[in-house]
Structure formats: C-alpha cells, structure tokens
Length: 178
Figure (cartoon, rainbow, N blue to C red):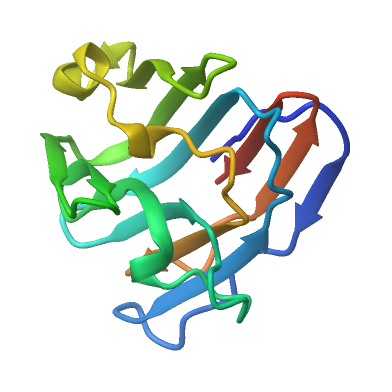
C-alpha cells in the first residue's frame, strides 16, 4: 500500500509472521496528524485468493494505546475472501466490489480542498473503477487530516507478505504495502 507524503520515508519491518495460515498478523503505524494534509494515496498489492484477507484501517487512536481498534477506524479498505471492500467507520456502511484471484493491486486516491470538503475519490484495479458510487458521491471517511494511525491486518496470507513504508511531506502522505 502506498500513501504519498512530502518528506521523510519511514521503513517498517515486515508484518510479523502468523503462526498458522489461518491466523492473523497485524501492525500499527503512527502517522503525524496534519491540518495541511490534502491528499491520500495508497496502493495495496495482494496475492488475492478466495480465502485470504488484507486490510488497511486509518483513524485516530483516541485512547492512545498505540493500537487502532475497530471503533477508532474512520476508513477501512482491502481485500477479503474474493472481493474488495470499503468500510465507513462512522456509519458502519460497507461497499463491496467483486474481484478475481491472482496478483492484484488496488490504487486508492482521494483529495480534499482547503476547507476539508472532499473533492474526489478513486479506487481502481487494472484501470477499472471499483466503486463508482463512491467516486460519484465521496464519503467523508475517505479523507482524514486528523488521522494518527494506520493498521494493517493480514489473514491467511503466506509468510512472505512484504513490508510497509510510509512517506510524509507537505500536504501529502503515502503508504506502500506489498
């Protein structure tokens, strides 16, 4: 997953290995909240199968325990058991798009204006827009300048699942997950 930021790059270790193929591995990444951030971009590369799951959650760690819990996530995007999905943390609303197994990469882009109103959202795989309804009417959850944490969770993914890097600069931040 790639989030585009304008500044330093933080390289993080690979996700910790799961003990068994059906177990979950997770890592949290602290982000610098910035009122100036206006762009969110990430690429999520996954060996998609009908039984695995990789998701990225973004939000504010309200209890400051270093772990972005489900109720603290504003936006969750990923692949789960045969489909791509987006979850709005505020409403619990979920949007799904069927996917095909194989090596896949989701490209997410959202931009916000200076007054924090969302201007656009795009989520594409192979150049095809996955969630046309979100692109037509972008939800507020698709962009958050107050986000302090990103959590990556992988389930049923081979131990060779890569790592996470975060780059931050100016009004942008980028995250790359492989």
